[in-house]
Length: 615
Image 1 (cartoon, helix red, strand yellow):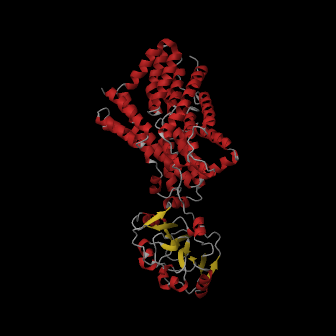
Image 2 (tube, rainbow, N blue to C red; image 1 turned 120 degrees about the vertical axis):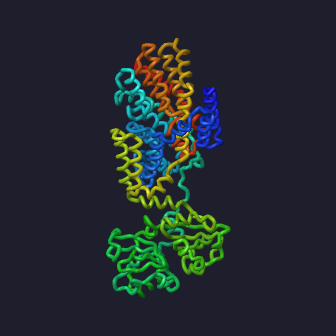
Image 3 (cartoon, rainbow, N blue to C red; image 1 turned 180 degrees about the vertical axis):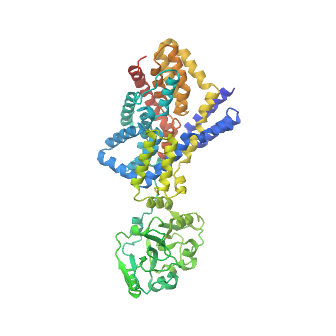
């Protein structure tokens, strides 16, 4: 009875995945709960996937990938690839897949996809092509790269250990490499031939767009700040020393605004600060000697202010970049139709006091108001340019009743904070790969080390930034589907089907049984992890080989190969799950593209495996 129920749950799950009417992670959770409710799995068995090292590794790799993207390392790698490929998109496509195969030969396919995904997305966006055209091929080649070396995939290690358990020599580091080369070349040729016909290339389906970003350059251009932002240096002879901004009444007297203050370390009481630091200018800010004041206003007004207080005006190399820093940022705010700020003057609403943000300008239907803003009454449709700390801007973004933040301040804050740290992110990535290749730690520990280093070195702003980059849909999907293999094994479903094929095809000799085991491994590998599939089929395969006095290496290589052919469903491999959301794919995209490839790979592998590893 439990066996029947297991296959019914499996069939319904596949049907729901295929229709794409319910989110994949919710479908997986429904299947998981069904196993528990029907007493097929215990709660501990059902939830075991959430503690599985693969799931933890996927979460960590999202963080590592975010650091690579945030620091600009992905863009640099993408630019290098574009330089090598020139303007030839086909050359870029092939070169990218070859590099993925090489990288994947020395680390897990999941790690390869997570590391390369931000690079691929960056490249696609830079050449104005949908990332969906590259991400599914990325996943497929990463799966094939697992056949390049012994350590590249758990399926190879399982096959090798099964041989050892039965008294045979383990597989060598490069034993399976010829199969991997053949498989990779075949897949690349297939993808090249079908990439313009079968691969989704609808930009609207890709979820990789970063959305609207209010960059400093765009701010300076739209609000015409190029000639309205000045840097004023305070000398020891200045008459403004030790005065608070609120007492100076600069907006009323000079029609200028102090946006931020860059201070030096020679000041009393701040010896523990860096050599220089920046702070947001506020009413209680006190002016000290050596301060640099970033002032917004007309040049005549700024010059009058500098003359009256014995200040020096210095040129600004890039006034757009001087609007922001790692601590201070800018954002554009829209008033909602029900906003309580509509009809109130800027001075009355106390924006600085309430939100700790400065108002730099108002965009009113294309007219930019930068002077005498204190007396301006806010209207519906106004866009307000504000400046403050990134934390305060994020807090304002939660004020959903009165205002709406345009763009993604958290994303921009993270990018600015990580500016210049691409070498650090590259070093962390290489360290993580080295720890995996030389097996210093388990792969999941190596990934977690990389993720933590990305945060503590500043490649990501903080833990909140790291959590925000995790794709929990993919994480939950993988975690909820892993117990499917436990249910199939516990009810005897896999064993029954595998032994049935051996009984049916045994009369056709070793070659017939090899084909049957390969096909069964491929079919079940589309719905459970490649690791679980290899664990279940390796003992069956070696038992069949020994019973027929055939070469066990032939059967073990076939199982390891078949378990890696995860092409036909998005749940067939964590790599497919990773690109499912990022590429905006549907379940049927994998079926449409993966099934023909499965047929081709079956023919190729059934020639190559017995040829290289004779019976």
